Image (cartoon, rainbow, N blue to C red; front, side):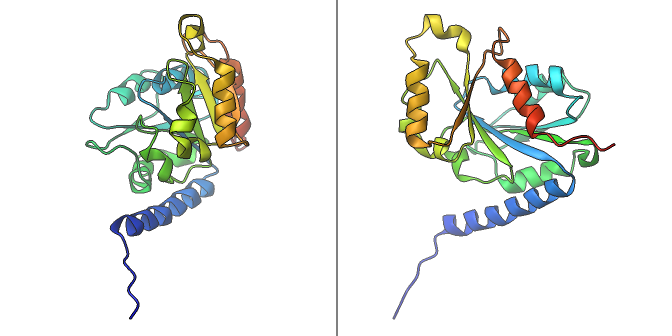
Length: 222
């Protein structure tokens, strides 16, 4: 007699993947590019998005979904910089967003007037890596206040990423962080990774970040 045990996690992940495919198709139907922004807590996701919304929010018809464990503080900060709805997802302690939450969030956004969707995931280098949200690309923020070995300690996050944005570069003179070693560690995990270096505080590198966002955003309908 053959017995196969189906773990609950296996079923949950399979269901999430189905929903993520629906999200991806829904976004594609509206011509929307979605980016999944992930990092450790405090890496600067919200600050970078504040600068981004102020500069490109309207030119790129940008919508934001902001995830957090317990508060909507980040969403409130972002809402100051846009006239559009910033959809908050409060997970109630869960360490990641999932495709169902994103799909529900889309119900409240004006998809017909959106070309770029940025999903600010919960600050965590473990859980979010395993959950497809229907995004077209994954961007990991890696701050210089962390150790250069973060990609080696949390390889799955960097294996699944498309871009790494090294943040808070204005602090490099004050912290023992070798940015070249950090990038080499990233490439050891995922040789296809591409990099940007930014400081949302001073503005250094933001032009490259903005150019990247312009390059992935579909052209506005004429």
